[in-house]
Length: 170
Image 1 (cartoon, helix red, strand yellow):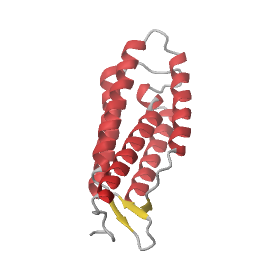
Image 2 (spheres, one colour):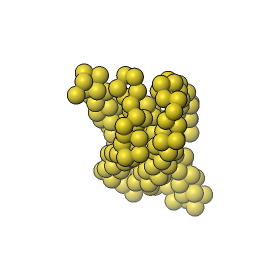
Image 3 (cartoon, helix red, strand yellow):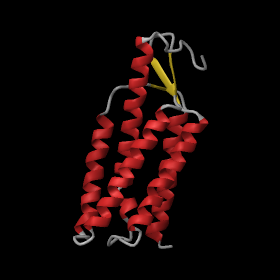
């Protein structure tokens, strides 16, 4: 394993740990998508940089990217159903993921990287990275955005029916 791949692995594990931590702690539920837009722009630039070195690999790369983003959407929607939501005393909506949320994160990320490897595993960039590495930020943006959207839609339906719990665990 090259030092660049080892560094990418360490960074990837650290990012996964941060994402899992933030998913499993109690946090305010927000309708703000600004961070996702910023990360999407960075992800598109990162992917465009990868594509510059691969002018003749478009078909496999396109299948890998589309498949990965579909996987991101499916897992984002599934995780949204595992997150607990309640209204705090001050009226603020709060959210907290469950152990199933964490398991779905790990399986979803493995599915992203596994699908990439099966479809376009031999296509590597000039820096040794592959399509999965180049699209990981896009994967995260799509999966987090879909999770947020489905969670907010679920809360709106619950609020309309008067079913949002008043405390965690209710």
